[in-house]
Amino acid sequence: MVIIITTTTTINMPNKIKLMRLFQLVSPALPVGGFSFSHGLEYAVEAGWVKTEEEVSQWVATVMRESLGRVDLPILFRAINALQQNDVTTFSYWNDYCLANRESAEFYLADTEMGKALLRLLKQLHPADNHLIDGDVSFVLAFAVAAQRWGITQDDAMAGFLWSWLENQVTAATKIVPFGQSVAQRMLWQLSEAVNPILLKATKLRDQQLGGGLPRLAIASALHETQYTRLYRS
Image (cartoon, rainbow, N blue to C red; front, side, top):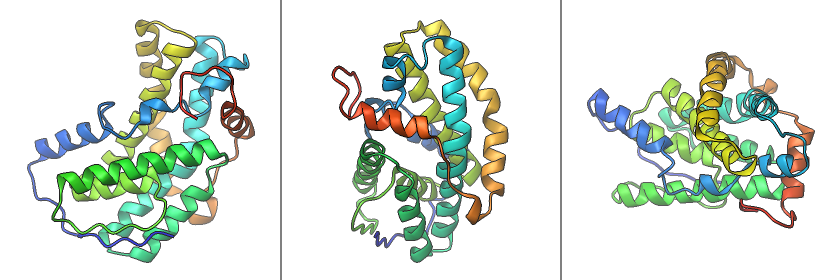
């Protein structure tokens, strides 16, 4: 359970500054540790489930569409709505719902560790704000807090969240398959073509339609927890 008391006042700043804040929020330099998790991809490569550029692209596209598009993004959309209305109960509900969809201990760890790190950063950047959080918080919900605080629109926040995850996955593939940088850029170019339909659908889903089911992804994450040699955190 999460209890949050937060200011509802959005910083009034020029659009270019808001754009810079979005860049900062999705940057690999953001100190939340996203680079240390492969989100199941490392085991999938180790097991031989994905070996080629095409197979990695298919894996990432499926996760992006059926997991992020049906869980993370629609919840981010709802969380920003809740913050705009200062609705603590609804915000806490979607945090619990999001964490309940993490099928492995590793997925849960990645989500909550990144969430705590982002909230710590926000407290350092805005020490006068009153953020009181008790319990585990999803990175998705912490991202919503940052987006609302910095005046980033829902559409831009959702696009930024998806891009950050996609870039992390392709970066992981370059290390563990491995691929060269040119291949990575081609994958990012091609995979980003699927972003618009995913984002649109995420805003249209009804509450009862939320949730994804990717058994192989869940198995990959669970088995990665005990993988003998690995580059990424478990």
